[in-house]
Image (cartoon, rainbow, N blue to C red; front, side, top):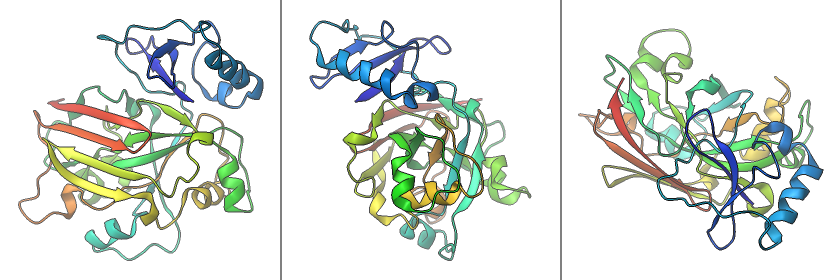
Length: 286
């Protein structure tokens, strides 16, 4: 299923994109797309049954309708740094022996086509297309990567916007350059795991002002999805509605020759993970 949330920011309602591409209202079946729903097999079964029954879910007019983040009440966003072989190479970094972790606050999340704000004083705002993993079952001390995959509810396209000066040059942890407002567009859809048979075979692409900048595949991941979930479960409990941003392929501005083409107000970024939907953001000054 392709689950999504539509409407004004803070007042989104649940929806579903059916196999014919028609947007359907889910608000008569479930109150929202949140972790509790993803953990409730009976509720998901009701959604599937309604989606399969003609006329049960009212069609929505998508004209002018904002698409919000596909998941509400996100618990935590755990991010994996330097998780692609080609991105580590362009950064001049050694291949990590273990996953590098940092966090993004849930309030960085915006809709896939919402405005992204360039922080005041920023000189090095950068782009990163990523595969986002949404947890559907509580995970703690998992033993295998296969168990890790079994705890995934679905997948989404994410944009891990980053400010490199804040991240690298201002001391402390990476979090300084990762948590500016609007720095995590998510969606348009949460695609349930049954429709993504191999999360390690997904092309990712990103364009800036129409120019292709990133063109990679999750096959390049150093630590694949199942292993990432297993690994994290030994350091923290993962709950339904938690999100994992799994890293970005090569092609970020930081990896380009001087002068590096960092983002500025007025730029337009478009990105997609194949099968998970496309985003488009115009950048404005904060």
